[in-house]
Image 1 (cartoon, rainbow, N blue to C red):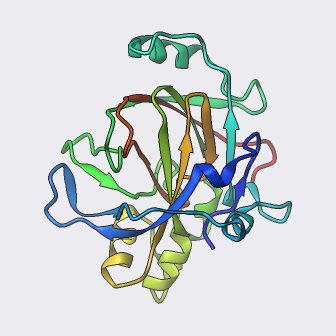
Image 2: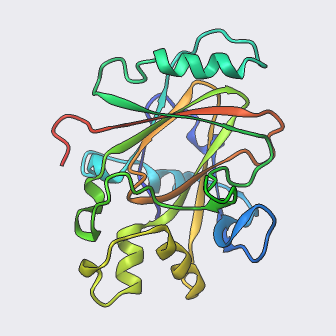
Image 3: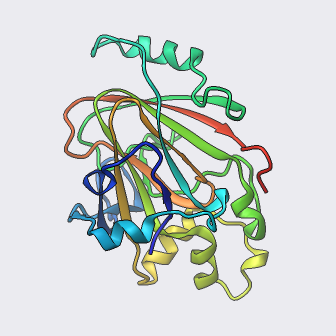
Length: 241
C-alpha cells in the first residue's frame, strides 16, 4: 500500500501525487553505482489509491507523513540567500513542538533525485537518514524530519512503498541483530524485490513531517526548470514513542 498520509491542508492530494517503479542505477553520471531511483514512468493516483494512503487515527505518528503548509516571506525569485536567512528566522510549526534547524539545500532544476553524498559529490538516490542511529527494533522511534520548500520553484518528495523494517525482515533471517542502512534498500532491489516510489508535489510554502529514519525517501526536481531551496528541521512531537 505504501506510506499513510495525513493530508492536512491539501484538498487536492490526487493531483499532487503519482507513482512509479524504482530501479537501480548502473554507472550513471552523478550517481552512486547501485543507487535506487524512480524510473520516471509516472502514473497518477486513482481515487482508490489515494484512499489507501489516507492516515486515520489508528496510524501512529511514527509511521505517517504529514503534509503541511506555511506562509513564506515575500522574496525575489532570484534571492536564494534571502531564503536561507528566512529559514533561520522561521518557526516552521508555530510552536506546536520544538524543532532544530538542520540546514538548507539548494537544488537545481531537472534532477531526478537531489540528495548528494558530500564526500563524493554523487547523488545517493532513495535512502534512510541515520541521525539517531537506532537499531532495527527501535527504528520507528527516531526523530521526525520537517522540510519546507522555500522556492522559488516547486519540488517533490519521493517515498518508497516499503519501510526499512519491512525491507530488513525480507533480507535477513534475524533482523533484530541488524542496524538498518541505505545499503539495505539497494540490496533489496538487487535481490529482485519490487519497490515503488510515491511522488508528492510540494509548491513553495508546502512541506512535510516524516520519519525519514524509517522510510526510504529523497527529493526531486524532475521536470522543473527552476531551482528550489529546501529547509530541514529535526524534532519530536510531545508524547512521541
